[in-house]
Picture 1 (cartoon, rainbow, N blue to C red):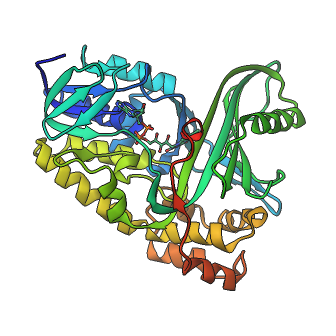
Picture 2: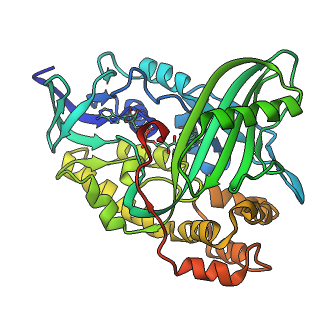
Amino acid sequence: MDGRRVDIAIIGGGLAGGLIAAALARHRPEVALALVEAGETLGGNHRWSWFASDLPPEGAALMESFPHAAWEQGYDVRFPGLARTLATPYRSLASGTFDATLRRLLPEGAILTGTRALVLDEREVTLEGGGRLSAGAVIDCRGQGFSPHLTGGWQLFYGRHLRTAVPHGLTRPVIMDATVEQYAAYRFVYVLPLAPDEIFVEDTYYTDDPRLDREALGLRVAAYCERHGWAGETLGEETGVLPVVDGGNFGGFTGEHHAPGVARAGARGGFFHPLTSYSLPQAVEVALAIAHAPDLGGPALVALLEERAARHWSRTGFYRRLARMLFGGAVPGERWRIFERFYGLDKALIERFYAGRSSLADKLRILIGKPPVPLGKALGALFSQGRPLEAPPAEEAA
Ligand SMILES: Cc1cc2nc3c(=O)[nH]c(=O)nc-3n(C[C@H](O)[C@H](O)[C@H](O)COP(=O)(O)OP(=O)(O)OC[C@H]3O[C@@H](n4cnc5c(N)ncnc54)[C@H](O)[C@@H]3O)c2cc1C
């Protein structure tokens, strides 16, 4: 490894790092890059989903290079007092396909898996084992949005991919089935019909407690499947704990992983939706911004990403305030009321919300009307401190 030199070293081959590499390979094939990933595969063990309306045409074209499941006929939501089909097309990509596609798209030798980076600086990356990589620019994409400088709660997931013994009969995704028991959280089940006899069922919780009880959640998914008559072989599982950010000190957060001259993207750079904890739309946007940057040198990329991160933070304050009302204003088992009311609103407003592009009129519409949580408590929550998002124990982190 000593002596190897690239134009751009991307550290962390998760969603953000992988998409930056894919966008560079597509738009700037002359750029020599290295994608350095500690794990044996790119993208870990995840399924990433998004609404077609999350991405502009160029972003959708980038994602088209990754084979993924697509539902053109929209999706369903179910609440105690509302069942609705929304026509927005939905997409989902499995990390195994992400890994295989990047290995096909990137030039030979660009991907270094099973390689942990230890020290990053402006022009060099020191790897575990002592190897070094020199680069014109280094982009840190090592994940993690937790930070004691951010406040909020948690989103926990346990998902199971099943091959059903008989066709399950579902044709559209169910993005939220909140008619289930709530267990002192906002709980919903998320279902993706991946093939006539394949289904992905994920139990999700907006909760104050980041501890994930894999066994209990597995039993709840099994009970949900049984209730719907879905029996069969388990093909895979995923778990995750993500921060839901309701406030904090952005300067403290960005200062935490600061290395002079090193650009930051992905969750580590602050590029995620504070309320949904999803980051695919932001990762696509940042990947394309890098691929179209006139100057790909380190200082220019640091400036580009810092400016975009600050803009993203200030644009997403509304979602943090909603998260604060969700965690501080609603009794945990009653949080579903906020989402039930939200899903009764206009389809285009919902699309802009998930894409993180709510207009002023959308924000007013979301807030105006009979509040689904007691107003006094919601206002009290807005002026409260919030709970620091310390990283959960390693085995519970995403
Ligand atoms: C169960 C689950 C479901 C999710 N579903 C969705 C979804 O449907 N849609 C969506 O948009 N988001 C979803 N998310 C959130 C999404 O996965 C994250 O927001 C996203 O992965 C963050 O991207 P990232 O590249 O910043 O970090 P990661 O994807 O976490 O990637 C960071 C990478 O850096 C590597 N790394 C860390 N340290 C080093 C090191 N020292 N050297 C080299 N490599 C290192 C890690 O191994 C990892 O691969 C989900 C998350 C989970 C856990």
